[in-house]
Length: 356
Image: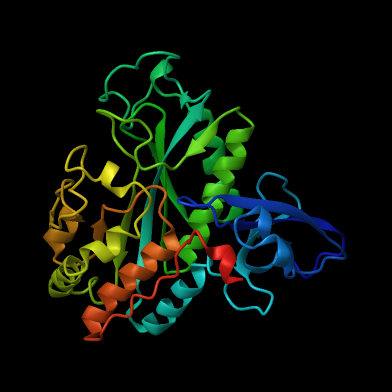
């Protein structure tokens, strides 16, 4: 980018302080003379991140990639939110992810996240009738053909946009409920896994705009006998990639801190993790091979090889990937290292504006 001589557009993206599910915000800056994107600011009183009497917040660029929608020299700029003294804002969860990643970098903790979501239009899931319900779940998962697969045009454009942006997208598929889809990001360490997920989410929101649709990451977008939406989180370390004993150790470690995890795994966890629809109960813990009704699933290939990775099936679609990845690293890597876990997790708080 430093070789550019002309001005270009930089879309600054950040996560706000809305509860219980933060929103993504963005605005455009014209960067002149080919310079790199620099720190910027915004009105935190309009994003639930500052009082009106002291409203300035700082945008610190942390991840930049090509803008696949505008093309050319234009870029997307993901930012951490900071206070005006350049310390992390109370809603900045990326800072803790950076810290835990540095602490256990020698273990090479890595993640792959399966991000589910639901398209909506006119207050109903995309493709659903205006009243009543579509055909029951069954034909939609990885389905093809006709009216039962609404949203594929958006998914195709989003997938290409992720590729053009250089995100680590690994695939996509239709999910169990009509109008529900998934994209996968990985394999990356934290906080990079969160960076790619958040930019992927922003692109999905932005592209859906052009189709007159919206994107919901709600854990249970429709009440009743319909699947919820999760973000199954696959995790490995250098040790698990070499040893079955390490896989058992991390599963057992996760089982000692059940509530500390699920309370930070996204809003509406108890609505989705019911023990039905391929979930374990939110307040119980289990792990097993090939078991989609367990909290932690061991893929069949991992059980056969006696080494590899685990899948934490509990995180919601609306989870914060920085929080989830830092929690898993803290719990699992501390167990492998024989350390006492710290579990310091900054969280979205209703009184965040009072802290600045």
